[in-house]
Image (cartoon, rainbow, N blue to C red; front, side):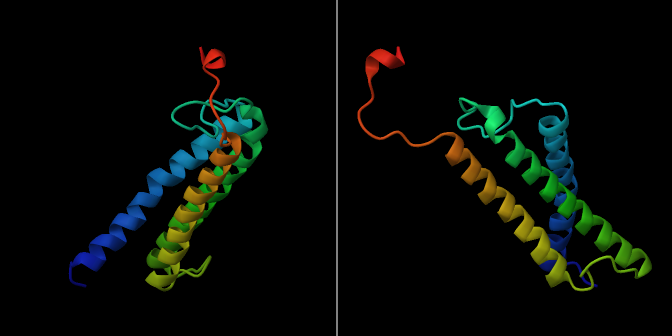
Length: 131
């Protein structure tokens, strides 16, 4: 195995799954268990008018993506160390596709939830209400 750009990118992707899984599972714990809605559907650092309404989808999204990242980490490590398969992790193309799809699904789903929580307002802004 020679060290080249492909090997470096493989390691970067695999090692990046560790902090992502940690933050996603921690956020799911904060939202679902502790009922802390301070990080739910933020737009420009501001929470929506009713963050509790969007807490369950955000919490479940973080739980699902965090669990998928942990499954990929454990599956790849277990297959490399022992040859035991707990998923489709024999080939790099398979587990990297799962990891990449998980990351992109999380990004798009967070964006969709944020857009639903902070809808666009059309028309003129009333300056007397903003002040």
